[in-house]
Image (tube, rainbow, N blue to C red; front, side):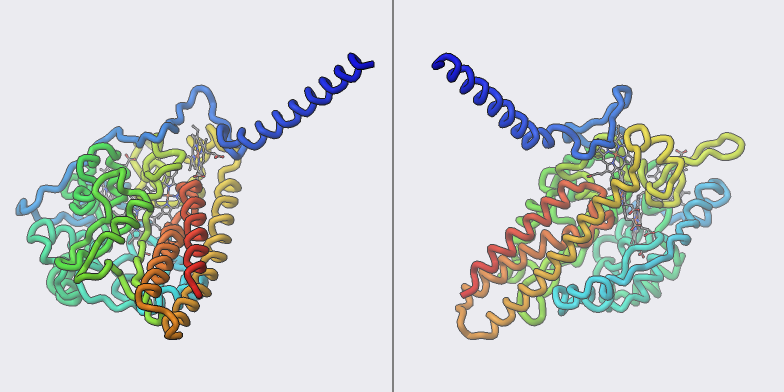
Length: 437
Ligand code: HEC
Ligand code: HEC
Ligand code: HEC
Ligand code: HEC
């Protein structure tokens, strides 16, 4: 009897161990294999997922004070007719989403800042000058033209950083009017199309010794698709990092929190009701794509996914300069992405839905929270030190939400980093709430 009982116990314990083992594998397993099972990486295709960044081609850095004259897109048209035509077709991307209408919480969160009144989504590169001059946000200085016309970088490169602080209208009438050139060849190639040349020197300053560790095709786009601030003294465009390892959201927050201007922590604006000194993050596509958790950074550049290659009727090949979503580029999907993805559109839709839903939810939580900060500030029940701690906690919580809200891929560039930022925002919201009496 006893031996039989022992066997039975052994059997039960054995079965229990198996069940626990299976449960453990189910719990731990997914972090070792890609979460979505419909992505199959064939043996023949190498996907670098060791955290390294593709760096096949290095970029040139523009020569400053060279005495060169800017060559316009129209002047290159004859030599590069197809490229010119694809570049000009960016006008087809003419839809603008009104963020102030669709994200009503930003009227409170950005109150005291132009973006609370007028904030449209991105559209084609050919509209940038029109959009910057017609936006409902008032502009004071020429620095707002940095990512709209190559004439700004050209003038900075030839004349110096003083150009950034020129009055907006003076730049428009005296310098831009010489060519009326909208974002064009010079931005990415200087005067040598075919070679990538970084003409926005602040990007090279921000990457330091890592300039050569990032592919030219990422740097071309990263000249504008990055977060920035205006240096308080010179008004020059400046990026909040000094190399690749300080390009993360955490390090960027630390950078801004350690930046002291006139005895106070740096702020892009002060939220009008609550007095919170806010950081405004702008389109951090490069930071997100090169950040921790990015699946493809070892394999593809911005250009690989957003430009694509065109084969003409007579077999010539050229890179399309029509910047589009990879999801609307059927050739790219068929020839490249489908090697591993069976339904990329559905996958991206799921990632974007999760990111968007959470951006709304947390955006509303932040709105409610900043109203509590305002009430606390007006109540007379808190010391200045207590209020400062509350305001700082709020600033940090909004920073992580902001990082996701203004990133244009809505999670597609790096869903892991997106999730991480939103989680951090929620944790910081709770920490801020705990400071109220
Ligand atoms: C000189 C600055 C600059 C450079 C360089 C630049 N962009 Fe842009 N890009 C912008 C601006 C500004 C907008 C928003 C345009 C608007 O809404 O007026 C934009 C918008 C876009 C859009 C959205 C278009 C749409 O239809 O919504 C895509 C995609 C894009 N850029 C991709 C790229 C890629 C890829 C590169 C590199 C090959 C690149 N950009 C380089 C400034 C730049
Ligand atoms: C937003 C950045 C950007 C702008 C603006 C831009 N280019 Fe390019 N260009 C690139 C990138 C990135 C590549 C490399 C693409 C690739 O190899 O896939 C490239 C490649 C080229 C090439 C090399 C073609 C080849 O076969 O290797 C030529 C020539 C060229 N561009 C001409 C132009 C001309 C002319 C203009 C203006 C009408 C222009 N580019 C505007 C980013 C830009
Ligand atoms: C692995 C492919 C891939 C790479 C590499 C990539 N992107 Fe994207 N990007 C996407 C996808 C997917 C979307 C979402 C497109 C959609 O919603 O249709 C997107 C969206 C965007 C948008 C918003 C487009 C719009 O219409 O509003 C911009 C701007 C953008 N990417 C810029 C960049 C820049 C700059 C880089 C390099 C730092 C980059 N992308 C690298 C795949 C990529
Ligand atoms: C060599 C295989 C491979 C190729 C080729 C490939 N991908 Fe992927 N892709 C993956 C893997 C693996 C993942 C991670 C899947 C997951 O987590 O479920 C992924 C994820 C993605 C994501 C989501 C990223 C994120 O952070 O969640 C996007 C967007 C994407 N791929 C776009 C593209 C585009 C666009 C192309 C074609 C230009 C492409 N991929 C080509 C393997 C590949």
